[in-house]
Amino acid sequence: MSQLTAILPETPLSDWYDVESTSSTEEDIIKLIVDKLAPGEQQFFMQGSLQDIPNPETMKGVPEAVELLLTTIKKGNKILIVGDYDVDGITSTVLLNRFFINIGFQNFESFIPNRFLHGYGLTTRSVDEILLKNPDTIITVDNGITAKDEIDRLQSEGIQVVVTDHHLPQNQTLPQCIIVNPKQEDCQFPYKDLSGVGVAFMLIIALRAELRRQHFWVNGKEPNLLKHLDLVAIGTIADQVPLIGLNRIFAKFGLEQMTRRVQQNNAEEFYHYLKVFAEKSNVRFFDSNSIAFRLAPMLNATGRMKDAMAGVCFLLSENEQIAVSRYNYIERLNLKRRKKQKIMVKKAMEQAKSLIQNDQGLFVYDDSFHEGLIGVIASRLSEHFNQPCIVATESEPGVLKASCRAKNADMMGILQSCDTYLERFGGHVNAAGFTIKKENLADFHSTYTDACSKIMSQGQTDIFKADIEVTLNMMTRSLIDRLKIFEPFGQNNSKPIFMLHNQTLPIPMIMTGKHLKWSLEPDLEMIHWNGSLTNDYSSQFDIAFTLSENYYRGEKKRQLIVQAIVPS
Image 1 (cartoon, rainbow, N blue to C red):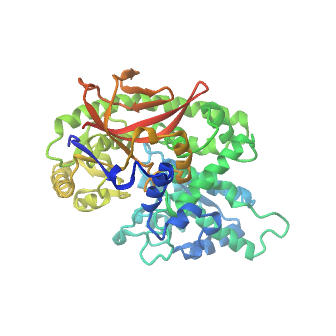
Image 2 (cartoon, rainbow, N blue to C red):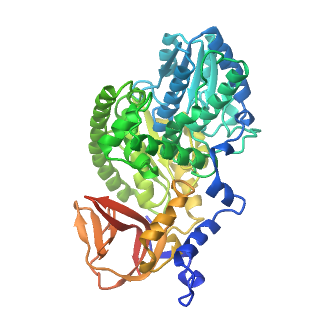
Image 3 (cartoon, rainbow, N blue to C red):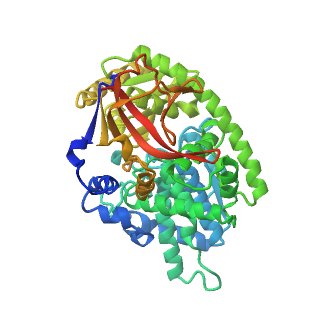
């Protein structure tokens, strides 16, 4: 592990602040943040609207998928939606359910592989289960791009397959079927980093347009697809795709829609889950945090601990009473998940500390680890040790399943350099997974650490980079309000990280044994989650932090959330 030695601001105080200037420091700070956007992106970022959603037919595979699905719908043939067991896969599955219900198509069913029974995605065991359901057409959502052999088998049984996915294609093993994925070669769609539910949303926009052209709604009203932006926002934020471009539009307007529905107490068809979640979680305003840290972990618990179809059923709850019952069930799973996760994190951290050396990448393996939680543990370790991390457990005799995370490295690139030893792998740049036979583990580990060593040697990992150096008196309520124009925050649109230099601190209060809190002013506090006490608070500190507000028991306080702290 690299111990942080310094915090460096991209924009030091001396570069932008003039003590004799009469201009507003708030205006200056906002301008500094806007200026970090590429010149061609500033207007779209600040003023983008739903009218800016591009033509979905420019996405490779969409016209062919629309033609096949239209034929299937007109014939009344059976469609099977095959989802994935994370939040992106769950919301994608629900989105297609809602669409088919809206257009009055009834001959469809949903299936999400159970990670404990079927493994990840389209596996041999998944295909066995799918064939029992006897579909005519399959639509995959958030999966399928690496399942060539399984899709070949389905097609050999006379089943037509449409893959909608957003994971990185591996061109040498692409399925020979209709593929809708903006990351394909020669795809003209301008936004490549959509979530799985974003890809599915673009497909149903195109499908609705074709149904409209063919006068499908002569005797009825065509569905308003914007009513489903709640699902697109949830899946987009939960899957941690970049919150810029089209993803920002989906997330921003989806969150606004969710807030309006809750505040207007609007629980019409499809939104009973939202009313119940808001009431049970005491959420009145939806932002990226309420999704990433409240709703998404709850939905993820279904797939991690039991069966993701429980998450699908909750989002499709027919009335409030059913939604309450399903919410309570999922929350019990989530509590179980948190307890197991706490034990696993402690055990994995201890193992990692004994393994760490020379920044070569971490590989933590334990047969007792819960298969559904290894991704969470890998994220924690990667964040803590600031380097690529793999956490693995035995999924079946002689076979390991692993989750990989890398904050500042290309995890898929690392795995591609080791693919000789892997049974299957897939994922994103910063998050991926694979299966491997135990007999190949030693060779894989050697190649993996070599790849990580090359990556880690290219960057200085003991320096924490902040955005803007400020003084404490600049952190006003008015600035907090002004910063809201940049929401929702997420990947590639992080909360601005400010820095204080030579800051004196009182002795902190310890909360629940592991978090630190400083009272700096009557309405200003600083929080360091999982912070470490130092023996000397008489010295001065450099502090990197984000700015927010906290509402507690009717009291509103400004909050500095520590990202890094080192002696000045």
